[in-house]
Length: 161
Image (tube, rainbow, N blue to C red; front, side):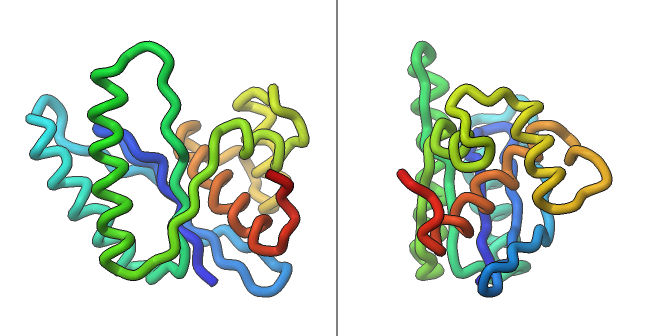
C-alpha cells in the first residue's frame, strides 16, 4: 500500500510518500512544492492541481491523507487554504483514492504519545522511526511524514482516535 500525505496551503504544499507492507512502514519520499509567488489565487489553485496530479501519477498511491485545517483568527487565509485543500480532495476523488484526514493533535499523540509535543520532538521521533541519519529538512517538509505514518498505523488499528 502506498500512502500519500499532503499538507495543503496556497504557497507551499508539503507531501510525503510511505509504503506499507504488513507491519513494515518505509519512507519513500518527502518534499515540498511551491506555487509561483505573487500571482492570483486562481492561478495558484491551477498550479496545485497540476502538482497534485503529477505526484499522484508518479507514486500511484492507494490512500491520500490530508491534514485537517485549523485556524483561529485569519479567516481570509482559512478560506484560501480551504480552496487549495478541496482541489486536492477533488483530484484524489477523481482518481478513486481513499481519503483520510487527521488533526495536528491526533498526529502528536500517535507519534509521541503526547498531545503537547513540539515540532522538534515530532521530527526526532520520525528520524528514529525511519532510521534517518538526520532530521528531515526543510523542517516543514518533515511534517508531511507524520500523517502518512499515522495512516499506516491506523490501518492496523494501532491509532486510538
